[in-house]
Structure formats: structure tokens, C-alpha cells
Image (cartoon, rainbow, N blue to C red; front, side, top):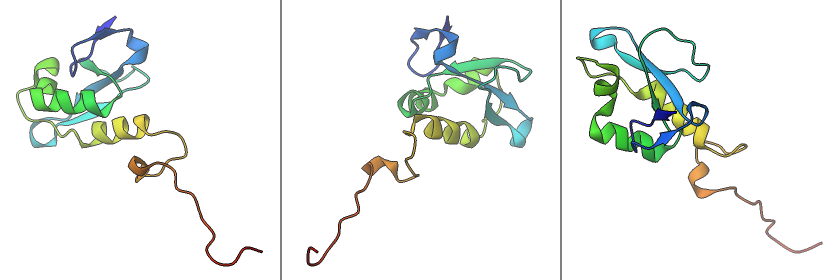
Length: 107
């Protein structure tokens, strides 16, 4: 069992996404670790944009990983967004699947 740093709910580790901090100073980035193999202190978040946004708003990344700087959350945000999108959807998936309609006279 692990705790999501966004919503603070406990869940099995298999349902949460582990991430680690890589780099130092201005080069500090958060990288997703779905295989749970990267070295270093890790933290967990649900692969849901709502939990990710809540963790950002609470500034939980730095506290969970014991960081002194402000990490770049870009790679982790992309991974969470991609993991949450349904299969076959494009980046504009918020509108749902589109249907092609024929215009003109029926044949």
C-alpha cells in the first residue's frame, strides 16, 4: 500500500504511478517510473490529471521527495495525460471521438 501525494488516499502500488527526481539545481526534473526500477527516492501519484493537479497545487512534489529546488514537472505531466487518455484518442481527446458525416445528396 502506498499513498498518493495528490489526493492522499492509500492504494496498492500497482494502481499508482511512481516517479523520481533526476538532476540537480535548475536541471531538476520529475520522471515517471512505471517499471519501478529507477534509483533514488520515489513518490506515488494516481495516473489521473486531477490528482496530479492537486499535488502541484499543494506543492507536494518537493516535500515527498525531500527536494530543495523547484522541479520541472513537464515529463511527468505528459505521462499522466497520456496514461489517462483512452486508447485511440488524439491529443484533442477532450471532445471525444469525432464522426465523419457525408454531406450532399444520398446515393
